[in-house]
Amino acid sequence: MSGRLAGKTAIVIGAGAIGPGWGNGKATAVLFAREGASVLCVDINPRAAEETCAIVAREGGTAAPFAADWTVSARVEAMAAECLARFGRIDVLHNNVGIVEVGGPVELDEARWDRLIDVNLKGMYLACRHVLPTMQRQGKGAIVNVSSLAAYRSPGYPCASYMASKAAVLGLTRSVALQYAAQGIRCNAILPGLLNTPMVHAALKDTYGPGGIEAMVATRDKVSPTGKMGDAWDVAYAALYLASDEAKYVNGAELAVDGGLSVKVA
Ligand SMILES: NC(=O)c1ccc[n+]([C@@H]2O[C@H](COP(=O)([O-])OP(=O)(O)OC[C@H]3O[C@@H](n4cnc5c(N)ncnc54)[C@H](O)[C@@H]3O)[C@@H](O)[C@H]2O)c1
Image (cartoon, rainbow, N blue to C red; front, top):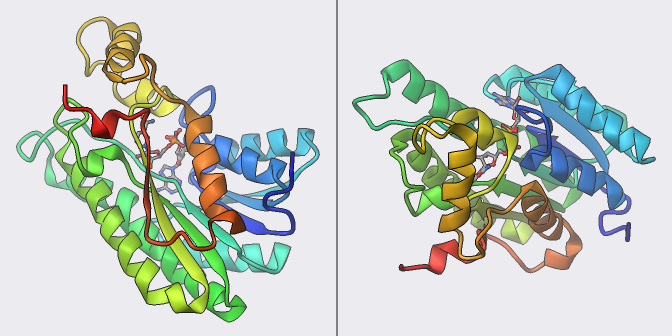
């Protein structure tokens, strides 16, 4: 621990994990706390948020859970108020929540399309909406939005709503980055490539053929230029940099965390 976020307060939304092991949000919340931040761990699943906080507590860090569906404006407003009441500031907003749906426009019915766009995009807008005024008052803040390489490139299976939502996250990131740059607020995006996380185990186990999780892992490892998928800590360390003052002149950036996949042509 080197105190790269010492004295700062961070909100991590999607701070739990969908299954056993390390998800991006869980690893990020734990790493932020290891680096000295007080972390509000927000999740729609209270038990997942509490589990992350328990890990932080065991390591001697500071974290508190907050249950919220970030597609509900009143809950997101309450989240920002809770962070201020408990910790007094909001230095970092880490917008990690995202779900994936396999299918194109014909396979995805309207309700599933709407829910994915709400979860992957509207929630991020609401988080910015309710946290930016505090960052403006402080004259400082860092927002990190988790997009995906799928904003630019197909992950190898149809996922129209996911690709559309992750591209939209980049538009939101650029807009916020420019509007608030002169007020000391930065907004950047992380674009994870192919990762081995509980999320893909849960959502994509049948997407790569009949071999289940093993086939999925083998196929995704093979596609990666490094021969292996990345993991949640790769995203967490990228988030740590963007959240910290080390990145004070980095704004509106799109940081691929993909082992080089985005520059591969064959
Ligand atoms: N794993 C990959 O290969 C990969 C690749 C590219 C991008 N990503 C992105 O990483 C992010 C997710 O990473 P993760 O590993 O933490 O996933 P995860 O699914 O393990 O954790 C996300 C957390 O968000 C919570 N959540 C879901 N809906 C919510 C809502 N409406 N309000 C509040 N919380 C909600 C879940 O309960 C869960 O605990 C997503 O944005 C995803 O698109 C992942």
